[in-house]
Length: 227
Image (cartoon, rainbow, N blue to C red; front, top):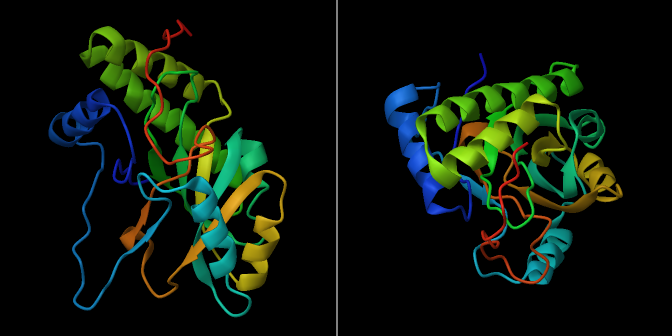
């Protein structure tokens, strides 16, 4: 069974933070906090709150390695993709984690990281990951009320339907592989990081497609659709 983590969700509404607490304390859905080994230093990939998007992307380009590897890298997509389309992005690089997000206009939804084994059937794995995320969000919807329940319910339904909800990927690849990924039309940016840390010590915060000027919270004043 894949391990699920709601860490590093980035800028999210208060209700999502409450959801996280609920998952941790009531559902116990396989979330874990790894024990940090002596001498192990984590690495954070993704933009910082308040950062200029152009500055983040320019730095990612400037720091993309030219040789060697493998390296960890956060692949930010121009828009959320369906599992099959997302599976084509990494090429020969291996995927360790996907960040899922259900895009709804002017409604804040969480970034949902899920570990991926990438055993040669990435499309099937991403589809299964979305279905698993949908099932867990449905459980949360059943325990919430009001807007929180409505957002969780529609998010669960869309994830189950195989929506275009893959927001970003954590990949491990050589410099050549990462540069090939960066050149794909679906990719907005590739930020490489340290290669000598295990994946559980790589913290992610994806760049949202709607964030075009500054990395800041999105509006949350839109109507929540029924489905």
